[in-house]
Length: 215
Image (tube, rainbow, N blue to C red; front, side, top):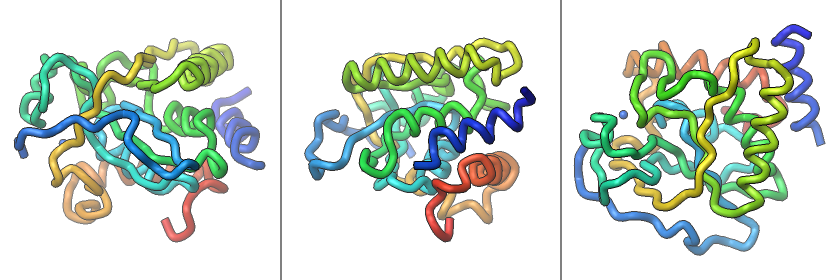
């Protein structure tokens, strides 16, 4: 089965029915409405991840930030050294009655390259690693299940998935100028035009039925 067809089948199957102020961590059990849950994904530059998930039905908010790592209240300049152990991530609030964590995992895996270690395109370093940071055993099991299924499907042409699946210990929101980045800078920043726009086009094509209206 060719890769394009497999992408389409996966989509149908699961979706038919870059400032330096000190930051404070967010409590991973922060209060939300009963229906909302959180998911935390690292897939390279968080500008890209944010832009994708903001356009997904069932997603309420997307916050770019830094997960885990060894230093407290990290800045973007510190993260960029690749020496702090943090990952650039997006923390997503979503409604599980509209979209499941498993479906989010599929969007995550199929909108970046999970087979490249500590790198996404020209972005290199441990901060750009592919990662799913789970908050409970159910998320852990689901993340591992989807990873295994995609590895077994050979969708990445024989290259093994190297995505880290780890418990979320702490999440620090990134500086304000990183938030809602593509929506505010998409027309003026060359990175957005050459990296994020093609990624969004692929996302819209693969997950057409789950894209928010007008996005």
